[in-house]
Image 1 (spheres, helix red, strand yellow):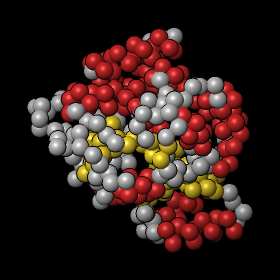
Image 2 (tube, helix red, strand yellow):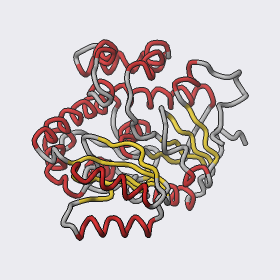
Image 3 (cartoon, helix red, strand yellow):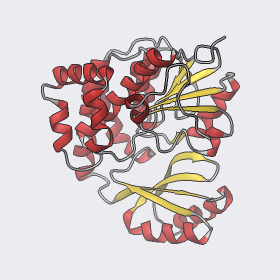
Image 4 (cartoon, one colour):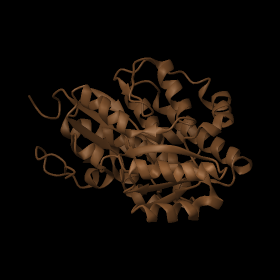
Length: 319
């Protein structure tokens, strides 16, 4: 049985990292799948996506988000043609929920384009006046027991915090007031950890219930979600989603529930998955030990699609 089409594989759409047009603009301009989807996106949005993305400021603009989502979908379609992939399951941590919903057949691409742009607008409007002093900080090499002690100390001081992401056994993202950020960085350093980056606006916190309601009322509530043709593994708890309403709930719950990648990889492993195709510009989820220690990981990124290997040799693997 061909390894690309055999059982026990899943496609992963990565979370969005900071990006600008230079990161994958060439892919959008040259790849035939991306060019077709870019034209469809422009028709739905009413403006030329490439021009807006090229001129956008910041790493998470509306245009960058639509471009990232589009790139992930285009790469998955390209990999189907180039390598004959036919995964058994689909998942998408954090931002990756959006292209996963499209690829699995739960949401049309056109609706996903509109949803992505409108979600970007909602986040900008909400965090312009609410939780303006909250950020999400990521760090690694932090044992769970020591992190618990640090967070307990923060709580004892009456300072709010929330764990937003469980990425690996020693890799976390914590949301907190910006005035406590330097204190947290010092604490991470003190337990032998390494701070990575700080995100603004923050994400995945129980405190953002008002944002969930805004998104449901203004964006997701009226969209039509179909039962997925490919089972989706929810990024909050690793559950298997088989209905459109479950997919809708996953997207909404992503605002108020932490991402738990450990639950996702555990679920995939229990389902017999042994190979992951990571479709998108991934800097995290296909690389952490929780992933690479369990699966054969194959990256499908813009650079590969622009410079494919000789047919039959297969794409590169994460070591």
